[in-house]
Length: 212
Image 1 (cartoon, rainbow, N blue to C red):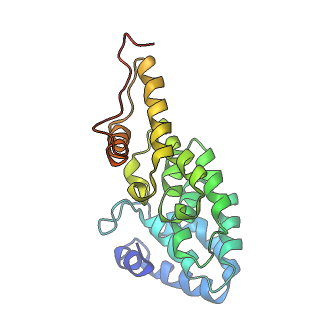
Image 2 (tube, rainbow, N blue to C red):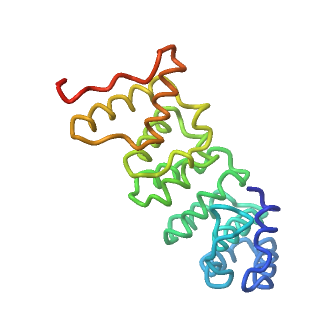
Image 3 (cartoon, rainbow, N blue to C red):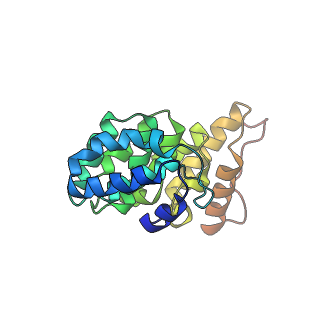
């Protein structure tokens, strides 16, 4: 999503005048975002946006506030994340790929991935996750599998998935099979695609109940 598409999706929020005023205030006085950011849920609502699937009004409004900043994007994003509640943290994570900060926000991704909040894990694996190094990215994908986050939220999954991730998924599949459990369907599908891409003739062999 771009700022323009989010702005269009926010037409009809409960208090559009507040959002317009807040955006102008942040442009003129960046520090004001620390007061306006938490208020977005109350003033703009938390309803899902029909024109922005997967987004809520408060998410979109908070992302727009961050993109409206004229400077200090990285510092203020870090402050808002560290002091915010879960919804505010998620909005910061979703804003990162739209901010001119390079890879400076990567520590926020690491923090989100360490949590047990699946909303934060999912937000951390969006487009900004391109800045994660391969090892950290693979571990984050496994965290999705462990925590039940759909792999559909992982940006560039097929482009970045590699043989090492396939080996990690195969090992996890074997562990779960031994415990009488299976990988989620999307993880199994990914493992099968990676195996086929590597030159195999089909899915990775998985142990039968008689194998130990």
